[in-house]
Image 1 (cartoon, rainbow, N blue to C red):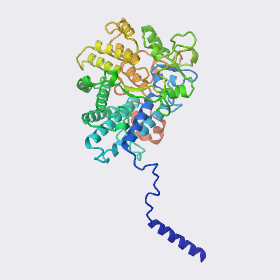
Image 2 (cartoon, rainbow, N blue to C red; image 1 turned 60 degrees about the vertical axis):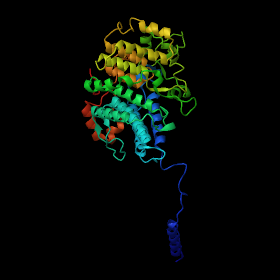
Image 3 (cartoon, one colour; image 1 turned 30 degrees about the horizontal axis):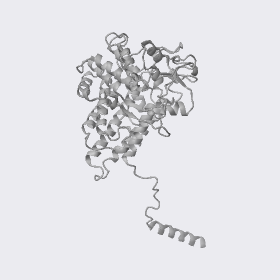
Image 4 (cartoon, one colour; image 1 turned 30 degrees about the vertical axis):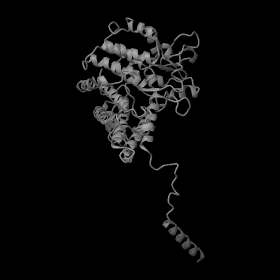
Length: 480
């Protein structure tokens, strides 16, 4: 009887307790239930920049694939081994979860902000900034894999999202980008101090957006010349062609917001990379004055020497990334003046815009030299060389622009690899092993292993649609 009475009293107390209003006593004020969209936007920007900048072989091997760097002790990644470290899956997960999902959440919260603090023009600008970053992220995934989850991608309750056609995604991204740019009000603010790329400079965001339009348009030029020409002719006068307008994230001198290359190469104390003979030999052959700004001399005879691409190399015997590149506060570039000028040179050659391709070509080289602080007299000598000058350099316009653009994109491995796939220049090195040929160089990444198991039906359909989940399957824009 006593036990029964005790249970009844306990139940009564519990029921009474449930009727009590304890206010916010059970709320952890240090962990807000609602996150401001600005914080999510900052996180997405930082995650995107880190992913595209770092040299961690578990997620970003594009400096290796582009043959700017090669490896010393461990060289699986230089031999295009994507599977051992699950590199495609790591990149995929970071982009979808850390970048795109944060952008999606930020975008969903923008309308609900108090109009007194965030007027409609500010909200519209915020939405445009998110959209530009969305386009940057999704276009990167398409350019890496081909068909990807898009329309069903961010519903995390749907673990079986379908893959959308890559060309269709590109078309929608270009529409979204155009709408975002047109909605920007340069007289209003955006995310304020939460905007870590442009610091609330909406004119800068508009120029970045139009530059991204130009990039995407030229990527699809061989696939859809009419669309590419229409876009580039509209934005040609408004893209980034001066280093003053470069899109970059400036890292800080102390952790945790330091240059990812410094984290990977200096803070870690690792000695995994040296310059690849591919780029060093080309630069030495051309007498390129950027060599000492890109690389150190080797430790033996103080010359600029690249390690043999794709095999093990002695760290001391070859050049390494220059001190500026491995500084903790070195900035990460997302779009720069050199890229903009080379895009315009290509647009002239394709007949999309008027002007002189040679002038834009020289301006692209000049912009790169200026960024690296190469003395002007050295630049003049270089541009006048017979094997550099547009009128006399070897090959057709694709070889000339492709080679010099690849040199200018040093330290931006993903964009460099994309441009190599488009131009087919410069001619990269073959790994000195009978197992490898030029046909071994990847044209895309294979889909993540998790997709083959968790989302098998959608994966199988996507692999069939693109012509096989192989590294040598060409993307829709990559014509032979």
